Image 1: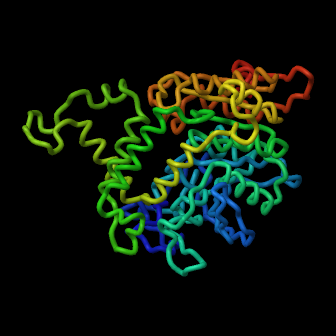
Image 2 (image 1 turned 180 degrees about the vertical axis):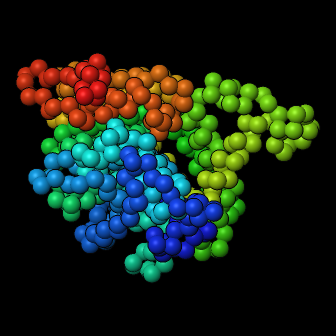
Image 3 (image 1 turned 30 degrees about the vertical axis):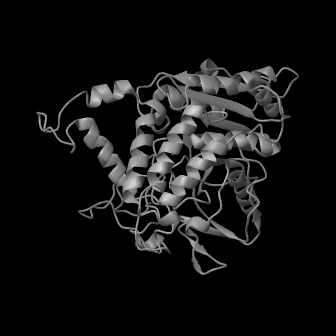
Length: 429
C-alpha cells in the first residue's frame, strides 16, 4: 500500500486502492498464500504520553491479521516492520493485485511463519504514512494535517502502542514477536520493557544500538530532505509542494547501505548505459540509473516527514537507557539490561550485512549468554547484504520455522538453548 503523500488523498480509502495489475487479469493465488486480506483501522481514545513528553490525545493503528486465533489466545505472533515497511506483510488487497505484502515469502500456509498454526498480526506504527496516525493524518486539535507538528517518536513509544494493541486484541502473551532491522529493535525493546508478555523473540539483521557510522548515514539522508527548497520546514503539503529531490537523495544513500559491494559488482560492474562515455552529469553508469530509479520510486510512495521521524527513532534506540547507571561500558550496560528478559531468543545475522554487521548481533547474543538466557544464533551466508532478511533463504527460513514451532523448554537454573542444528531437525518434521 502506498504512503499517504501529496500524490494521494489525505484520507486514504483502502477500497479505492489501485491495482498493480494493468490488464486486470484475476489473481491466481499460490496455495501457501494468505490470500486476499483487508486492513483494519483501530482507534484508541486513551492519551499516549511519548518519550519526548508530548501527548497524543488519541491515535489510530492500521493492522492486518492472518490465520486464526486459538481459544486460549496462545498462538499469536506480532510482526514489527522496518523503516519503509507497513502493516501489509502478506497476501494481496484484491484479486487483481499483483504486489504481495513485504514479507509474503515468510508468512503463509506452511511457510516459516505458518498461518495454519499461528495467528499473525502486523501493524503500521504511528508516525508512519500508511494509515496509522502520523504526519500525513489529521490533527484532531486543529482539523488540519499534522505535518511538521507531529512529535518525534521512539521505538519505546511504538512498543507502548503495541502493548495497547495487544490488550485490545485480548492477547496477554505473544507466542513470538518477530522483526527484521528496525523491527528487530522493537522485538528487543519488548523483551526488556514487557518481559512477561512474550514467549519468544526473533531478532533479524538488527543491532542493540546504532553505531556512529549508522547515525552519520541517517544524518546525510535527513539533510538531503531538510535542504530541499520544497521542504518548507515540513509544511510542504500546505504549500502544495513536495521535497521530491531530497527524498530521492535520502533513499539513494540508504539503498547503498542495504546492498553489498559484491552484489553491485555482479549486477552492474562499471557497465555504461549507452556503451560509451557521454562526458556530462546525466546518468552514464548502470548503477547510477539503478539508484535514481530506486529513489524516484520511493519518492512517489513515501512521506518526507515520516522518513525524518523514522531515522530519528533509529538513532535514539538504546534499550539500556532506562535500566542502567551512567558510567557503565556498553557491554556491561547491555548485559545488565538483558538480565530482565524472560523469553527465548533467536538472533539471525547475515554475513554480508554491513549496515548491521553480524558482530552487532553477537553483542546481543553475548549479553544474553552472560545472563544464562536461552538464545540461539544463526549467521547466514547470503549475498544480499542488509536486505537479506527480506529474501527466502533456506537456512534462514528453516531456522525461523524451527524456532517458532519448537516445544517451550522447561526453565532451569541453567537455561536451555536450542541450537541451530536442533532447529534444523525440528523444522524438517
